[in-house]
Image 1: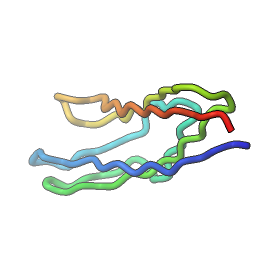
Image 2: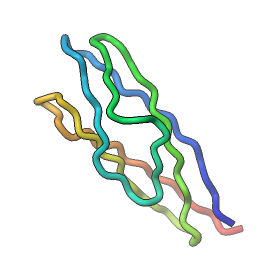
Image 3: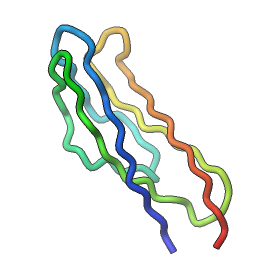
Image 4: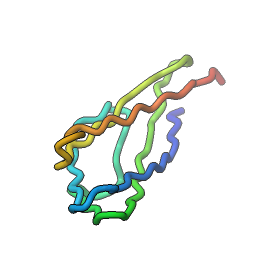
Length: 88
């Protein structure tokens, strides 16, 4: 049986200009639910939701979600995801 888990995370804009978040790359187990690109105003936060589909085999698994941004100090934003799949 395929197991799915909803995961929510937040990206904050601590700068003085709009932060543009665009889709980068994601592992096939990760599906982003938010439309992109997204604009985050200075001082604001945006919650992003994605669904993690666990592999069919038990054990520890890891995946990465990467966004491209217009932030010159952090043009690629990596979000690691890890999980442990237990045998049923």
